[in-house]
Length: 404
Ligand code: NAP
Ligand code: MG
Image (cartoon, rainbow, N blue to C red):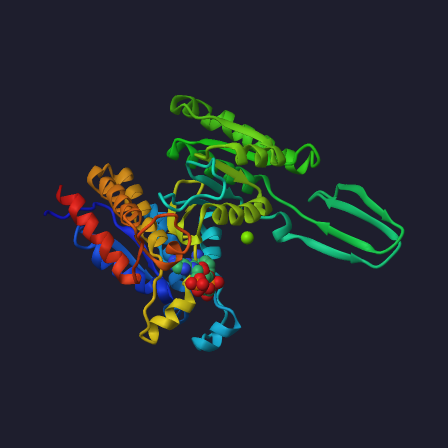
């Protein structure tokens, strides 16, 4: 069989621990035999980040802006323990945070649905994609522990010296106080990413906040979403037959529980933090969840939603059998290859990505899966495979599909 060719390289970012091992196997067994793989390789493994003083992370982010599509392996965000373990020169920031800052993106997470792993909410038939605003609100707050009687004020001093002042509360005893902010620019970029993503996915976009209570703050989010929609997306949405609608966060929850899924749900920072954990648990597993960072000017970075699966890696190093689920990492590759195929007008590459996903899901539906899924599946006659055997089972299915 002739290998599928590529015109533009993908930005490939290698990572750490167990996912770095899976990365290699996925390339060897699922990609290289079928695709004449073109990538620009960046090693974001912690040792190499340390060697380059983290320059490699910034270079990878720049390459992503240049080529538009990247695929990333899970990486360690170092803490004190990791600093000792890897003898690091310093504590580097999370590569994901570096990326979000460089690309100014929004993270979209969607569950991977497969027969035999049922969502807790029985009505959900299609994935619900959550889009979390990744800037501001309580994540950049300023807080005061109020010791006793006194007056709290909100004061804004403009560049020209004009002062706007409001009383927050007059305390007659101890209490607490918090200041939060966001910027029009960040909200607008968030909105653009959400509309672009929904359009590309051909799915409705919901946005929820609490503007009945927070008339100015949440009201501003609602206004900006409305403006971005009217100015840039309304016609394209109508052509695609999809809709945008805003609703209160509590109403959104009630509707989501009764929905069939199949839409994009844009959330403010805190709502997205909380509800993405709820959605991933309700859909089954973090290892069955895709994650893509989309920048407002249309760059895409695909990865798995989980971490480097450290505990499994230590077992692997000791020569013990592991059964690590590679589905989310396989889907990071298929997502990136499909996007590359679409951007380059390379239909064969996009079709390969579809088949790779189908081969992966078929493997599970035939009852061959890793231990994490075997524990929760409703399928009878399940075979638990080790980390590499699962990838090889997918490879066999994929080769059969490509041959027919
Ligand atoms: P984790 O790697 O997501 O793993 C947590 C636990 O979830 C595992 O111990 C395992 O449970 C289960 N799990 C996760 N992924 C799995 C998979 N693919 N197959 C089977 N089981 C899976 O999170 P962590 O252990 O908290 O973090 C490890 C490292 O990852 C940290 O250094 C952190 O900084 C990094 N991290 C990176 C990213 C990223 O790059 N995007 C995201 C999160 C964390 P059992 O052990 O019970 O089997
Ligand atoms: Mg959370």
